[in-house]
Image (cartoon, rainbow, N blue to C red; front, side):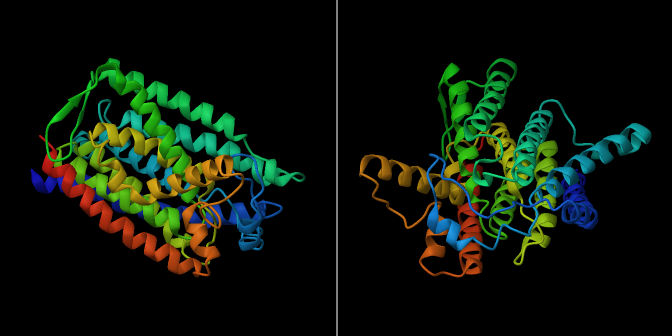
Length: 353
């Protein structure tokens, strides 16, 4: 039985990786032929202000390299899930490998695809903008509203459909919070959405997210949520396929269609594994990234324009200090692995399953 469960997790992981590797040449050819990159490098801060230091650091990086590389991730996951479902319909003996289930994988798959499509629209508008490039794409407020809508849908599902009224405490026990589960879910989704700014250096977001989803593969498996573990494994495999081509020099960028789908799906996975309070440890690089942006914005607002970091998010601060981008990325990977392991240990010690 254990061997069968492991096979159910490892097969989608490997398949998603190879599907992503096989898909990339076709996607890359289309992205380059269509010139799916920004017409001018640079961006605006979340508060709408200018980012001169960032723009100088990246003045040659964002032009000529396509966005939308995140398609590799979610497309490989959708294909893998669809393949195992279809084979189970054609050959009933393979049903044990189908990991699509209403109670474990429908909602994370839905949020992955919904978030990815929102991001895809934003990316499309970014690359097709000919003038006023930095203000192209979906406005931040619109994306925030859409993500909040997804959060409300997920909150409803967990509270009314799954009856979730408590969250697990580290090292054991539970804290009953009743209907407060709903605003907590929305808050976590918005916080993870904000952490999407980690997608800023070649290999950074792909490596960090692969580590995080790899950790949740283990957690879900240990909790006997095998379908969810298989889905997290497939996402990890898709991320590794993306990372293969995103390691410097990147063939393409993940951009919003990748990171937005991943962060919304991660929110659902966190609540399905009841690991809300250990999430800040498992996903420390995401937390630190979002926190650095919030600190910078608050400092500029309440300290008369004074900044805490040379530039936010945090990884760009290290760039501005003179660190090579590859050093920043690889040290983020090391930190991600260590804290994912620590968070995994704490979660599993306290898990009643």
